Amino acid sequence: MKRIFVVLCVISAVSIASAQTEKVLYFEWTSIPAYTNFASTKMLEPGQGEIGFSASNFYMWSMDTASYDTRTHDLLFRIGVIPHMEFGLKYSAARAVVLDVRGGFNVERLELAGSLGFGYMKATKFIQPGNNTLWLYDGYPTISAGYEFFPWLRLVVSGKGIISHYIREKVDPPQNFTTIHTGLAITLDVGTDEWRVRPEYTRYWGRTNYTLAEEPIGFKTGTLGIGVLYRPRLKDKDCGGH
Picture 1: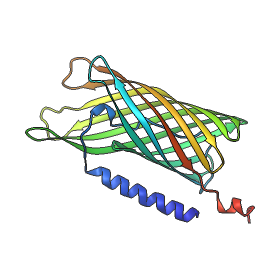
Picture 2: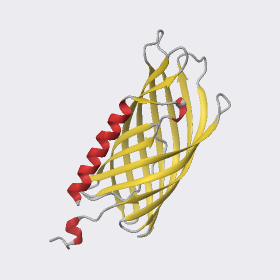
Picture 3: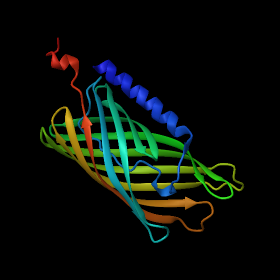
Picture 4: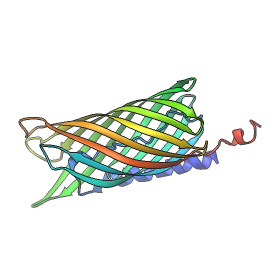
């Protein structure tokens, strides 16, 4: 089971990353990063995996630019590699693919974790008389604290940053810009050892520095959603270690 799960995760990661490389999208630049977390502070054991799906509502408002909201969803993959360390892959449709490494530990019921993720995408928006193509590079530093009230319930609070750099292709003079988000996420982790349900709320404050704008553009964003995740049991654990 463990080997099959790992193979499926690798195949899915390669497929999603390949599909995103030349993605053609109608998009708003402020909605590109992966704003959601849907992660627990309970670390996976080496060889143990986690796979899941989530749906959420994303919204943005600002005095400097248009406000809007949209529906989105995530595909989530994680696997434990060594004690207290995981690798993860998240696809936030249709905006971002993020690879991250995460470490953590616990002191009795208090759990602490930190992660660093990276993502990129080449996206094209059709405009007249030609196309508008951007290269997007994102960084995702995150620190989380969780408390286990019961084996079936924990509360996770995360401080998260998103640093996004956008490079507009084949434009002279260059029209690059950088957006920095800082915010918080509150996640409930509810369920059994294998099946978990994670309602989540996030709130971010963003600021964009654009080469063609005289002043930085400020805005606020948030998401409200729920994820369902499955953690298969390890084979040696099922068999009592034999």
